[in-house]
Image 1: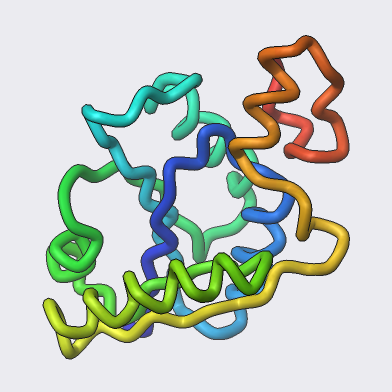
Image 2: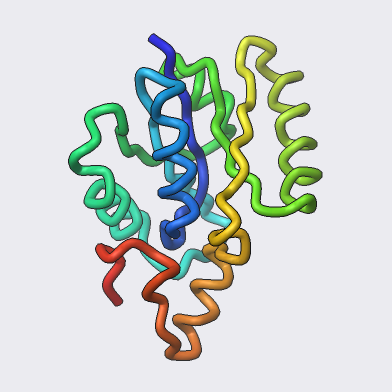
Amino acid sequence: MNRAVFPGSFDPITLGHVSVVNRALPLFDEIIIAIGINSEKRSMFSSLQRKQWVEKVFKDEPKVRVDTFEGLTVDYCKKVHARFILRGLRTSADFEFERGIGQVNRKLAPQIDTIFILTEAEYTPVSSSIVRDVVRHGGDISGLVPDVVKL
């Protein structure tokens, strides 16, 4: 099976994330959206809430599975027998950051490749960090996140 893991905090999931997954679907038999649980990173939303939102967004897509994980992404990929890590790129800074992580992942697990998909131009400025900042200040996040993300 041609399986990819799309790891991230998804705190919360954005329309950019959704776009990357939808555009990657033709490339893979299955995409596992893997919500990373990092005890040292303070999330705005609980892992359960984030998982529920992602599941609702992709409820009608049989090729998408949602899971949570702790630890190294490559270890999780090995556990679920995924050969690919899927990452979205918004900016050149994202590329530089993700390239470094991809190269280390390749060193740790040579059998796992990282695949990059460019974010659609309209979602370039949208990140989970920006959405959280808008939420903190009482702003309107419609148009940045899927409709299922209700606050």
